Length: 611
Image (tube, rainbow, N blue to C red; front, side, top):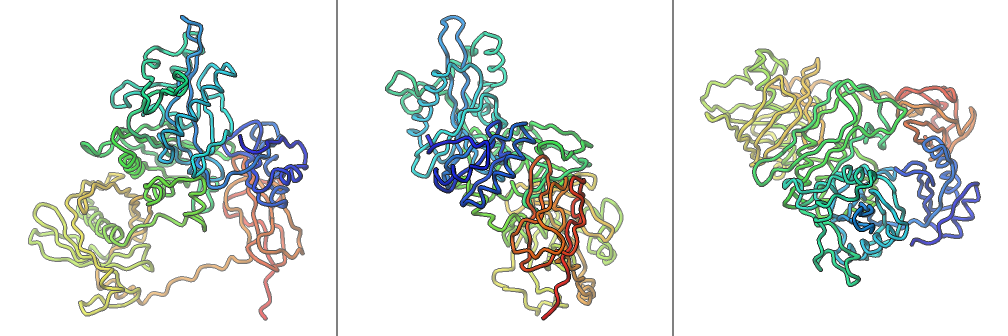
């Protein structure tokens, strides 16, 4: 067990925290999901965490009672699924334990990615955890599906957290790998098993027959106390939330104007993975601010390996289209491509370590960006040919989208991020079989020249030879399927805006792409980049929600990081802090208790006089 656990009904939480020793965790006693949870490293954080955590606990669970416990730093969040029931023939309690789930990728103490089995746990640790879980279930005479949660440190020491006497959101990853795996059809349906137990019929015999009693994974010296259901392959799940990862995962609301789920199988042959979608939304669904922001769960199963399952989930997310609200798919896609994640380094500190300044967008390599430029050029070409119009404005008028089969080299300029973004010169040939070979060179911004003699940025590193073998795309499609550099890839095509900017998504990375002729680009270099409006003296609501309180008054001088106000969205209390030091509050614009729009002005600072 962790060091002493205390229940705090009043602000004596500071004394309790001091007695336990920092860091401590404050959490709601009546529920989970990260609601009301705060990690505290000193007395001041405990005082604030108690105030905000109790308000969230009251809002979500109708009970503001909080627990204070020791916080184990950089652990893995590991849980064991159980299914137990009274055998109607023998009267004995049958207990099934399943391979553990790793649930360590979390934001705001709420799970985002779950997988089974864990890449961190050793077989010996698994056996000992299962032995203790079965002992717990037997001692409390528990009958149903349930989950026992632990923290596991880097030395494989594990600490009991809690037992959830219910089915968890992430139960599909356990189902898909159980028994002989999803592909075989011989796996466990936990919902079915739970209902059979509730009906008094006990655990179905076909599930009991899946117990692995080998010494390698299950049988312990005590006669089977460590026995668990055998498993096959690997499954990984992503929770898809209506939230803005670019704004600290703040909730997002509004209608789903476009919603397309990925296919049930992604990949081909041995690379294929089964995809399961558990969704609570449909096209046109309105995401309100009154409930948890989860939209769906996307689960990938591979009978081969964890690596295949990760790639399968990534491919599924590339083919998952959600428009109308902000969502976390770009963030999840970036995590799945992270080298440490792929290697299995997944402590609960993962997001904080790899995104210390928050999420700023998917990161493409230099070669991937060059490939993106070639694909964008070809999608624009095909839209121009098949729609018989110039979707990319003047570029089409110069003949850059024509092809007469003579394999002449064509040259265009691709602006990634718009006309003032990164500039790439794309010289390409389209061959008789439809394949394309191209040379892509990154150019200095506003160079005004694309002549052969002009110097590219870091020429040796920035030029790439790209081979696009095939592209399956029609202008009415939401997706383009390409084979590039020997890899099958899916891109989302969102069409053009009124300026001819083509909007595409690859690997979760959104790009506004503009394709121009060399002459057009030379003219565009004379345009001045617009200066952004200075909003430094304004504090705006980062999300739709309700203004709960102000922490300052007009005329106050604030410090950097000082609490200015609290905004509640989806029952989560979000503290808005000062981004300035020594600034004077000029005006409070909002009304406590009023509903807020995203980017609505809450506080205006007085203009600072220049020295």
